[in-house]
Image 1 (tube, rainbow, N blue to C red):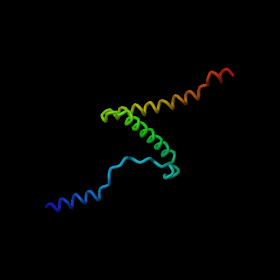
Image 2 (cartoon, one colour):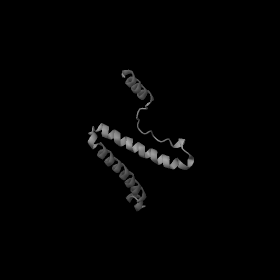
Image 3 (cartoon, helix red, strand yellow):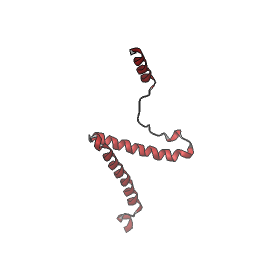
Image 4 (cartoon, rainbow, N blue to C red):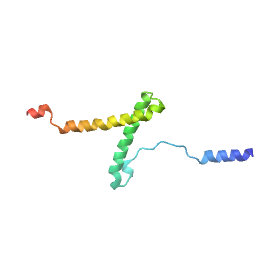
Amino acid sequence: MKKIWFSIFAAAFIFCEPGSAQKLVDPNAVAPEFREAAEKRRAEQVRQRECAHKAEVAKVLPRDRTEHINKCLEEAAATPAKASEAAASPTTASARQ
């Protein structure tokens, strides 16, 4: 009986793959018609990893980690929107000319 359990455990250990994190999307590895979507997905994955790294550096508790990452992602989404609005509106220096 002991040999059977050992055999089952050994087989499960050998044939099971370790659970790994989702890999970054490579836009060059997809078909050309899906490349734009892959680039957007990769940018989103990079933002998520940066926010997760910020949570690690800040030593956020696991129970608060999701909230911290979501807040970071919202701030990251708001920042480019503000930058594009500032670029679209004329500055006071260019308005004088």
